Amino acid sequence: MTTTPHSHSPAADDRAAHSLAHVMPVPVLIGVFLALVLLTVVTVVATFFPTGSFEIWISLGIATVKASLVAVYFMHLRYDTPLNALIFVFGLIFVALFLGLTMMDTHQYQPDLMINQPNGVD
Amino acid sequence: MHQTANSDAGYAGGEADPHGHDSHGHDPHLAHHFETSQQQFAAGKLGMWLFLVTEVLFFGGLFVAYAVYRSNHPEVFVDAHKYLDKVLGGFNTIVLLLSSLTMAWGVRCAQLGQRRGLVWCLTLTLACASLFLGVKAVEYTHKWDLGLYWGQAFVPQAADMPHGDHEHGPWLWYLCLPAVLATAGYGLKAAVHQARGHTQAAAVAFCLTLTALAFFAGVGAGKAIPALTGQFLAVEQDTAAHAAAHRPLDLSSRPPAEQLVIRDPEAASGISLLAIFFSIYYLMTGVHVVHILAGMGVIAWLLGRAMRGEFSGQYFSPVDFTGLYWHLVDLIWIYLFPLLYLIH
Image (cartoon, rainbow over all chains, first blue to last red; front, side, top):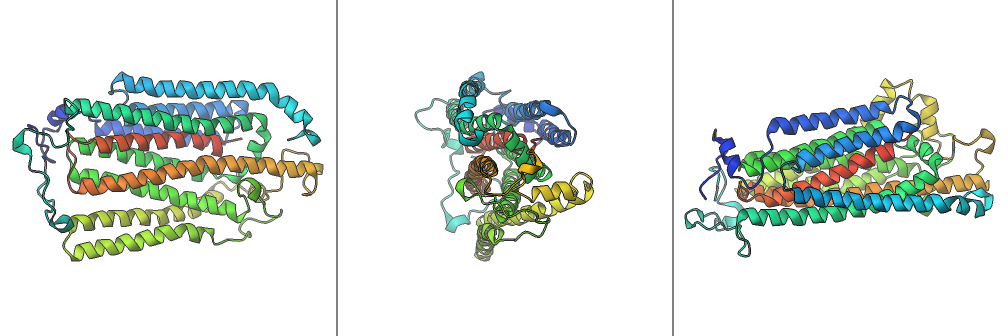
């Protein structure tokens, strides 16, 4: 092995070039973490204000921004081979299909089910 | 291979030092069916992502159960939010995000061959996970004290009980027992290894003792944060709202006249609806906790290997792949938190 890593060598960037994958800089890691904490605080504080039926979409939107930050930076997807991101996105598409079709189905039949129950509830 | 100056050859009863391959031009970590380390790493990572997709689909089923139930019974979810403390949940979210930061930082340390940094990052990750479990233990046992179990076992306590007056069962003590045993066991192990001069093994045991102790910090936070928020947000969580949270039989979305005599069939069905909410809550958070525990086991294994200086820029895939898993578990919590705690 030509590059023997040594904890305190000034050539950290040089060694990074020899690593098998992209090395995430510390400021990026801390910046992403602070953004995640900020978004968590925002999503909790937002629930103290009445936002009506938008509430779930606001909180799910914030959650999706947070999830993207984790996936793109902490999970290195931005610097990774596109194949891995593609596989992950395909997984999410299949969850969306699963969710969407099940919701269509339950909305189609649930009113009938509710009426047929004694006392109007199941 | 890289061996830092301060690592101990005496670890584990003088095992043969495996790091002697530098001059041979042969990477001991490269399996013979791969051309290069690069190819081996890419193949491993691809496998890890495929596994993560199966995890996403697995949790996807639980999210579908949640979505179907919530869209058919929105009023139950509006009721249910009173039983979950969103400030405590937010605190736990930040703890988990912090563990993700230390894990990602640990991957960086492994890539740069920083042995001490990696050991610290893995220890902090474990400690955060343990703290998360401590808070979760308080949350779960508080509900169990109120009779808020899952499915058929759901027997909410009788109404009109002022906050603080409900019974404190032994559940929290039971859940603390594993942490007590782990603290004592690893503390003892650290002392014994230290006495025998196995400093690396002693250091690993010491890190695991810290991890076990973090559980009690979590229990403390779980007890203190609701008390503090009760003081600072006095207007928000004053007696009425808080008493409502401790009156499980009260379905406030219904007119007062219909409120609850338990033999009223509609009320009984309201209770069984809430029971299904709690079944979903326990299933989703419980499966998540199982993933945390599994991840902690793997990270503890990494900790031992990191202490022996086994990772470098050319070989860090176990740390990297465990990190991917850990971030996914965090990612699932990022969705569980608003869906369960932030309902209005």
